[in-house]
Length: 234
Image (cartoon, rainbow, N blue to C red; front, side, top):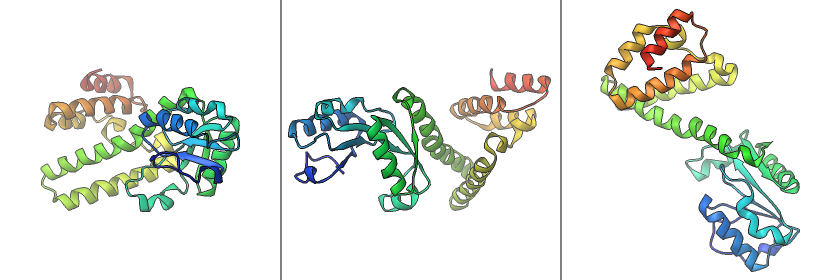
């Protein structure tokens, strides 16, 4: 396992090498590993990028090593929490057949659920991950700010939004898209209009975009759906 500082002297004593570096450094790390001549056909080399397939590991292809990617589908803000957070998380695997098999064994050993992907699917997969994780944090922050502007104490705003999101995520786990609640799924056009009226233009754009996405999951009467689409700017 490497947090890159050059090929370590013990490389020949391990079977699996993880390149835990930023995406733009993977090819350089692979080039250094290839130049070290320490990687052989007995090795499996995996990087951890959510976006990239095994292509950046191409400098290692002449070694005969199995090449691939293992991406933990989990947000880990504190390293010490990683063991607990990884249990039950999906591990997305791409690469050579042997690399995927080794990656799956490694994933299971720490409690993750391995899923094999085509390399061409990684960008779509990673966009989904970014929307679900990164933008959830953005939505929480925006919601906290709006709550505070409504007069709710900051600690109560954060706790209240977090509790609401936790409940929503529990519903999503149980019901998927059927867990959608709120004014759009109910067809409450006047409520949506009131929301838009108090939001600044930048947040109106966010609200409209997410509202139109939510509208696609509803079964509203056409007249109500048309009014909602018009209000949301479709």
